[in-house]
Amino acid sequence: MRRWLGILLVLVSCAASAHKPSDSYLTLKVDGARVDGQWDIALRDLDFAIGLDGNDDGAITWGELKARQGNVAAYALARLKIASGGAACPPQATGHLVDHHSDGAYAVLQFVAVCPDRIETLKVSYGLLFDVDPQHKGLLRLEAGGRTATGIFSPDKPTLELKLGEVSRLSQFVEYGEHGVWHIWIGYDHILFLLSLLLPAVLLRTRRHWEPVATFGEGFWDVFRIVTSFTVAHSVTLSLAALGVIQLPSRLVESAIAASVLLAALNNVFLLVIGRRWLVAFAFGLIHGFGFASVLADLGLPREALLLALVGFNVGVEVGQLVIVSGFLPLAYALRRTWLYQKLLLIGGSLIIAAVAASWMAERILDIKFLPF
Image (cartoon, rainbow, N blue to C red):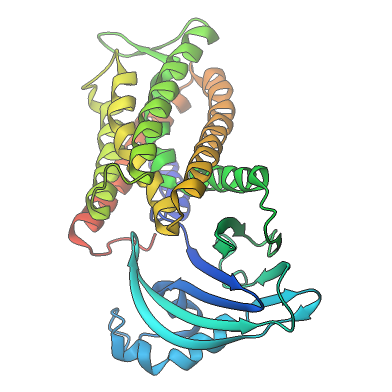
């Protein structure tokens, strides 16, 4: 038992990470043959890539960043290629600032690129951090002629070519749908919350012990109610937060998300709520929606583009959830009668999830780091 719990703890520890993945925010404004750019890059990513913390005290000061501004510009701009009509438009740094996003401080690199002729089609190639972090994403916002286009750079799609004045709404929708799928798959706190609610779905609690459900349909409808409740709830708050109707502090949201994972996992062990876990999914889903919204809010899209991104991103999240559920439910149903499932996975797995969530909650409330993930 101890050996299997140890293995599970190692696996969860390797998989777990902070809620928000590594992103940078690239804004390009086109006027004639000129491109004015702003690139927000997380200080933690730059520190990992080129080293900013000169005295290794765990805190990056303005002085340390200022001393390395030239290195930041050289590192970033060497990984950004801009071209128009087959001709290169080399970007040149013009300024350095610091800004804050929902997940911390960012270095802001301002630059300008001048093309030989008026820009009709802009080709942008992005290679920041892909060599050290395969999960990194670059979020592009392009403004030209009063219109806004968006895009997402990833290791498998490092280059985007945008024709000014002919923005494809469908392509933007698909881009943000893909980002939603990716976000749920690497949003480990969301996954652990769902798993905590799904683990008992193929079991029925009697007075003394767990009993396996008699049919697949019983487990399926329990899962359906849970996932539907979670989806409806986070869709509501995701929409309200992304549209700016309701705003909550990031630390409060992230702490509450960690608390939801902790309580959902402990409920499998101490059985505080048995029959209506879909209500738990709905209540805490409202909080998780604010977490999803931080990804879109940080991009700073105008309202017309934000609505498109919001719908696409939300659809992607639902697709990502369905993939997880479709893989989980048949396997759980097949194992539901075994000691492996009823003791090791349900009880042992829930305790491990609770331990990880408790660490997340303490870190997010106190703004300190206990675990290396």
